[in-house]
Image 1 (spheres, rainbow, N blue to C red):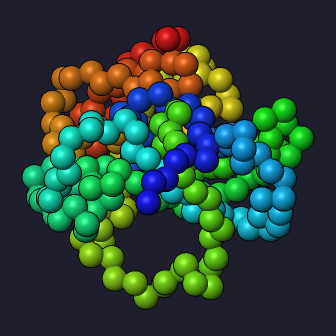
Image 2 (cartoon, rainbow, N blue to C red; image 1 turned 90 degrees about the vertical axis):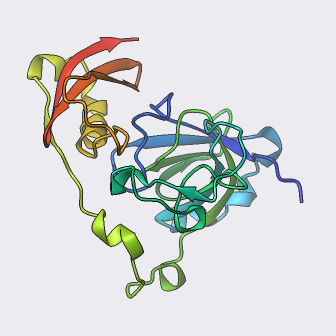
Image 3 (tube, one colour; image 1 turned 180 degrees about the horizontal axis):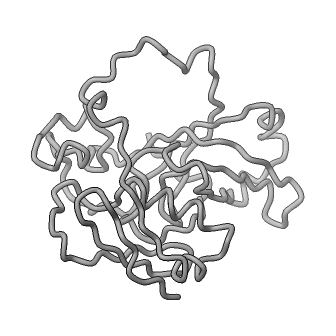
Length: 225
């Protein structure tokens, strides 16, 4: 079977670094799905706006095109413990497909390139190809008694963010909550441990520099790109 993208999602994150590790971690992070011309059919989205959440099937388009890896190192396990690739959501898979549950904010049927889907809680870079869209159905998709595996150790994680007011004011007000959410989940690789190192995060047309000391992340600069 040959599959092709049906559209593209546009987000505030041009690079992999800083993208939340799972969908739904940063509710304020938004995206806009624009469909290819032959899928811009109003009837194809009839009654979709009755659902609050969607499943998106997409491509890890920024991942290196190398052979798949049978084991990977989940960042939240410190980058040293290996698990099977099929026990992870790593991009280094036989088929580089991602699966995300996002909130459907609205559908703009009247946009020049509509229908355009506006979603939140995303975990994708700008320009990510979208392969399919499906409604999230709580009655069948939610399993409250599901076993969590090793993720039970890592599901609660937050780092304190020290964002000097004079630097935060440079970020547009409507983008601040999303940026703070990204930083609070510590975008560094799991094996990072150099307190003196400054990291750079690209977000919404800005370069955001930061360092981490213990459990405190301090923003050092915000500059337009």
